[in-house]
Length: 567
Image (tube, rainbow, N blue to C red):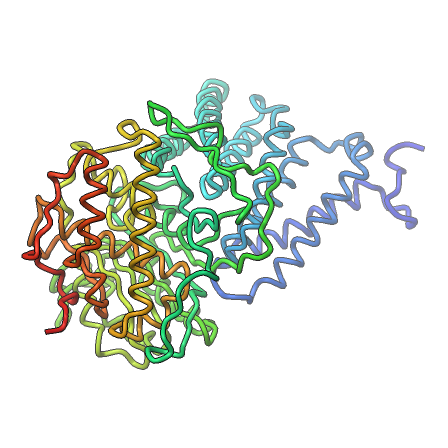
């Protein structure tokens, strides 16, 4: 019997015909889900499972009938394309749900494609196959960046660069300039996302961060309400900002900061700072990809890249509508600011070109309709102070706000800029010790492991003391009291306090309020920069790094606005 007569079922339908029918069905479903938004809580989960079921059938079918399909003309790159789409499905579902299991599964499929070289055959004879391989490598690179698999990231960047160069020679009539830009974008991203920035995970690690069960409770007299971070809306919009694909360096850091570290309590660090700042074999042991079943689910995150204002508002409205009753929504916005842009508004954030009459401006008052639900606003902009105007005008729930300084402090490193490294304020919220070092002009090349470990212990002790002091203070505002039990928000707030204390005591900007971040509503006096504890710890940290002269300790220190102790 010839292979054309080989059957897949008892109805004598040829194997190849069954296969291509399944491919067509899967393609149609894939096209639909690819265009669906990454937000909306459960609306598309059922559809994902339907698409995934078809691809599972397709993958299993080609495995069981591989020989017959190859005999009837199936190419290896066509198998690779199916595997690549399964990897895309998994990554898309991770972006929708923030479930790290999908991220791991996506990596597994992409790594298999790379190892088995599905796109190798005919790579330099067919420009379509060459482009498929390049697109696969770029998608895999995004997965590896978010997974923090740094060795593979470097390998992929090199492969894209080599392949793009070879393709330019092999297909002289085709334009591969876009891939040169992809390589440049990746290299620029890695210059900001250095080994030093990843000495410890940006994600919440049960080994390095306090276990949620051990966090001190806020007194019932302050609040009986306990809200959890359920959703986050992350977006940044700056001219020429560091990014790869649709992930800017600032949203990339915030995304990780609001997730549990994969493997949970099974985390094992292999990272060591050598004398030249290079890392060891890997930052994390991923061989088992064990997910700790005791960990809660990650908060869902919608990451919007350069959205239009109307799209941003539609997403925000949808998330607020679907927010669980015990949830709080974190809104992170990093954008250039404008001042006095409209009547009754002292400033706004720019989400597009200037000079368009305010069509691309987000004003503080734009958020007022959404204050019927609990919100935590994290605004990183030179006009962030304008958002204080929201306080007292809310429609139902008092808003908690962490607002960046209006001015960037002088930084000891001569080559530092937000266009090379991302925002300093966001860095303090996501990698506080690294931000402290960069403020002083230090990097991994300047710091030995022992010094860094001692600094980490000092900082952890400060955070622990601050956390306990805040939770047990009878001056704690209920707006903070109801969310201080959430581990992600607690960590952000403590890091904000560190940022505030460091900049308050930083000698070059001493007593200059425009360089200080603002917290609304205010926090208890014992955790303010004027108290002895942060002054002592920051001077100890500075001494460890040989920079004690960069900070001052004085009772004459001017406190940030909204942080004045009660008279």
